[in-house]
Each structure stands twice: as C-alpha cells, then as structure tokens.
Length: 133
Image (cartoon, rainbow, N blue to C red; front, top):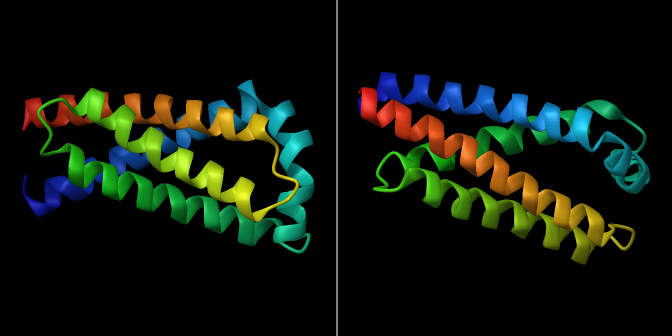
C-alpha cells in the first residue's frame, strides 16, 4: 500500500475508533465508567479534563496506527484485529488495575470487550481497504 493511501487508511481507522469509543464509553456504558473510573481519572489529571482527553486521543492514534500497519499485511485481518487490539487493551486494563488501587475489575472486563469490538471494526475496515486497493 502506498504511503498516501496508508495515511488515508489510518485516518479511516482512527475515525472508526473515535466513533466506537464514543458509543461504548459515552452512550452504552457511560454510567459504569462514570461511577467506577471518574474519581481515579480526576485524581490522575489533577481535576483537569484536557490532559486526560489528550492522552485518550493519543492512545487511539497509536492503537490505530499499529493496527493499520500490522493488519494491512494480515491474511485474516478481522481475526487478527480482534486478537491484536483485544490484547492491547487487555494489557492497558491490567496495567491500570496494577498501578491504580481503585481501578475496578469491572472496567478491565469492559475494556477487554471494548478492545474486541474495536479490533473487529478495524479488521473489517482493513479487509475492505486491502480488497479495494
């Protein structure tokens, strides 16, 4: 895949990640995340919303960059997307639980499921992009 097409492909995956993230964290499970993680997130950001927002934004950029790069060469991007992104977000969930004493196990499970859903979406986009290019 040419470099210019790759950046368009990465942008499409990033846009999909933002939409899935908003639906998952903002609409479907907003209550669970809000009550369980809001205090921890506020303490980490010293009560400021912007540093937390930028860290989430940059994490999604890196997740979609790495997913876009590795999955474009995959023979089964849907399966590999679910595995790759699911494991990546499981790592973050367990790391947060290990570092932050108030990080609940419920959030770990939800983050792993979020990784599986996000990996599925990125895998579908990758399959479509590779097939059409």
